[in-house]
Figure (cartoon, rainbow, N blue to C red):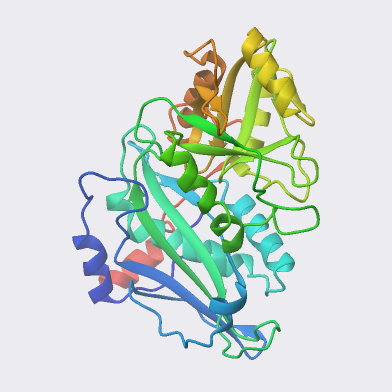
Length: 370
């Protein structure tokens, strides 16, 4: 249970209280009016505080703008109809955040700072956590370099901050088609493909623009060395159902270790599915889609949850459409995962953490009354 909350001023408490759910929700469009910030200076983390959501002052020579020393996470809090809000697997996000920090030569953040920042934002914004299916309070922890200077060297000072946005579904609706990217690559072996840093995502935008211009909603990335093996969608991991067996690419230095991916694997195995983590040859996958051996494809991630993919396509317009458009395996897993996340089903994995204030003892209640 998370119950160690940062203090908040009466003025900011009122600002948070006055914030209402926007219509329509969108995804990540409307950001809450408060945030948490904490600086790393003189070799140590300073005190975290709740602040108004506002612009930072950054010099044009700041290293973050030149060398991209930045990491982030994406996570969700859910509003329980008959209970306190809950975070989904926050300790796993912390672990991945610090793994990203190590790869980007940045300081790891202590668990107490990270978790109290999360708990505080969820607690003070609990009234604007939406309750619709697939809706949540999307939370974005970020760390960035603060030093100014044009030399290629690690920053000495950093800022951790956390913002939040009441959000709906990542995909607005309709079939999701993905372009097979056979030209550009997302990440190379030994690079930063397995961590959440800005450059990984910035490098995918060119392909995303091209994909959208052709009517696709996503890009499916192949390995950089051979342009042969499936890696992931942009910002989401990939699963295929072939002859009733779930396949997903084995993790390596070019694939992000998705927390939703790990949840899907554990959940699917608990439901009796055979799940295999191994290399997926794109040409074999296309052949299996054509023959019907591959009955389903789906993407999974914090934002998308579990989203069926109806077809893969090529730059020349060739489309490989999945035959089972109902996606029963994907939808079974999506429903069960959502039920765990929003509290409609038991959580045998203990993934959810309750966010609730500490219980008041009779002594503290009596003291408060004096």
